[in-house]
Length: 84
Image (tube, rainbow, N blue to C red; front, side, top):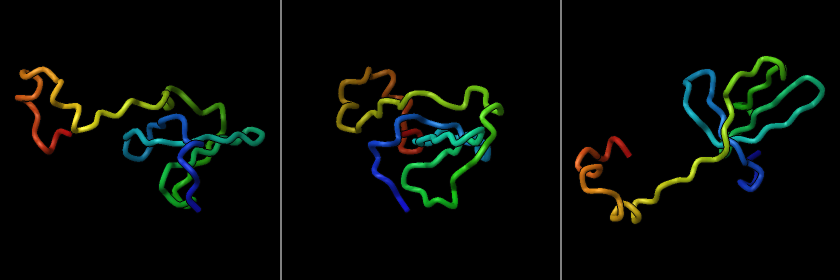
C-alpha cells in the first residue's frame, strides 16, 4: 500500500545500491523500519536500531528545470541530459 508523501520527511541511503530515497521511519521496540515513498511494502527494510551509521538526512531541495535559467553559464556548459 502506498502512503501519502506528507509522512515521508527524510532521505535514506539504501544499503543495496547506496542511492538516496525519500523515506519514512517507524520504530517498534528495537526494530527500525524504513518505508520508501511510492514503493510497495515488499521493498521496506527492517533493521535493529543499533545498526545505523549516517544513512539518514533531511529532505533535499529539488531543483526544477525552469529554475535552471538562473544557474551560472559555466555550470550549465557541463550539463547534459544524463547529468540531471
